[in-house]
Length: 396
Ligand SMILES: Cc1cc2nc3c(=O)[nH]c(=O)nc-3n(C[C@H](O)[C@H](O)[C@H](O)COP(=O)(O)OP(=O)(O)OC[C@H]3O[C@@H](n4cnc5c(N)ncnc54)[C@H](O)[C@@H]3O)c2cc1C
Image (cartoon, rainbow, N blue to C red; front, side):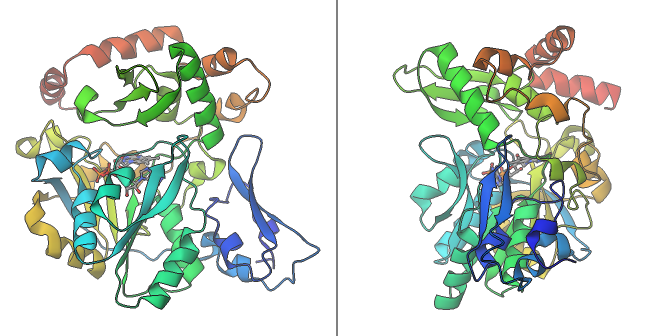
């Protein structure tokens, strides 16, 4: 292990900002590269080679093996369930934290659709964190904020949620697992850069001749429990549905073509190596794993990874309908619990031209070849209830 973060290979760095936040000389800046992913840069003139940045980097702080309880669950409250991407695990636990005077950290879009972690301490703002944003969330100074809250308000519960690498980054930054800190990691495919998402929003705005002011990746009111959502523009009142199977940004995300380089060798794409007290994801495949528990309103899979995860669930079990399940059933349709996304060959060139090509030409690179797009579009038109029947017959 070298003495500064400069020695960390680019394809290993998660961009969590722990090194920047811990540096006593504030000589580490975290800046976007030409693809728009954040990486640390050390001002060697100021650096005193204390080694703290490396000591607090999640790459060098391995996650212990866990022995989880596996659940399938969904909120009993239909309104909250409809606002959640899957079965509302997050909202169920978040409500408990707020009711007990705690604070929650999670990913929200700002008014310019920039994804970043924010702190929430009231129910009205909780909806900002709800829902999946399929883009890198900037953790900004939230690790330091967590440390300050835990130090200054020892009675307060803090619930920090995010990708597994962000949770691991937080623990590495803190250097310990404080009693009042609860964490939840999401099952994660990988994350595209904010710069790519900005380019896509620029293209969408141009196409609709209006500024996009809202983007919901998983809005169930238009697409049901699936990968699709909606946009809203500034002046037009009508919302526009986004079909995740064919939309250029969404479908390239689903094909794994646009992720940060570290996502393709993610150490947390492992069912036994979870960084959070809880792991939450979609229970894809529930229709064949537990046909009676299937609901078109959405079902989450949830792993209670340790005693804190179990404690949170015990405090909240009355909010959910749930069943116990197994690792085997959860992983059948959720490959990212077993291995990182395989890097497609197109990944290394997909960001080329992001600064120079006309926006239409650049975005056209994100489309799948036409025949595949047509097939995916046709499949996406099949009503989901019929898809379930077909899957059950074919035992898929
Ligand atoms: C980039 C990404 C990839 C994912 N890949 C998978 C997958 O392969 N398989 C799977 O089963 N599930 C995946 N999920 C998780 C899934 O989409 C839901 O977020 C999860 O099931 C929780 O849903 P919910 O109904 O409990 O709550 P919701 O209210 O929908 O979830 C909100 C939670 O997600 C967090 N969150 C949202 N966007 C981000 C972000 N960009 N970065 C960090 N945290 C974020 C919030 O902080 C909050 O904790 C992914 C999510 C993201 C953001």
